[in-house]
Image (cartoon, rainbow, N blue to C red; front, side, top):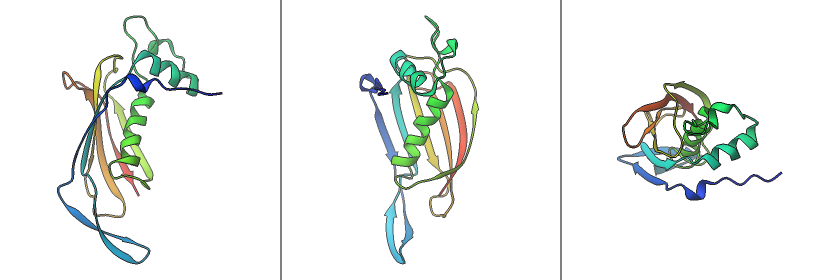
Length: 150
């Protein structure tokens, strides 16, 4: 079974801040590495994205497919957070060892959302991060949470 995601329609804007460098130890060598302390991505989730996600996961709950009030799957929003953690902040090789989230209110489709991830202590072996997914237009929070990373 092949599932094609319709994210091509989505405009993704990435902003990151990297104000300091920290010491990393890898294979006994010490190197200075920079990691973003905060990354923000703005994107729009289309109804076609919801269908592709439902096809992949089997979550066909009708609340995600209402004619004029479709809402984004909460776990899809967490997938966007995971994408940032594993590719941008802190980046490749990151393992999420704990994740806690709160779904504050439903996230509508076809509206721009902003996903923000902030690393709280980049210099530690086990890092902590806060995240929030909110409306890019109004700032209304849809989900927020905390992660521990290795």
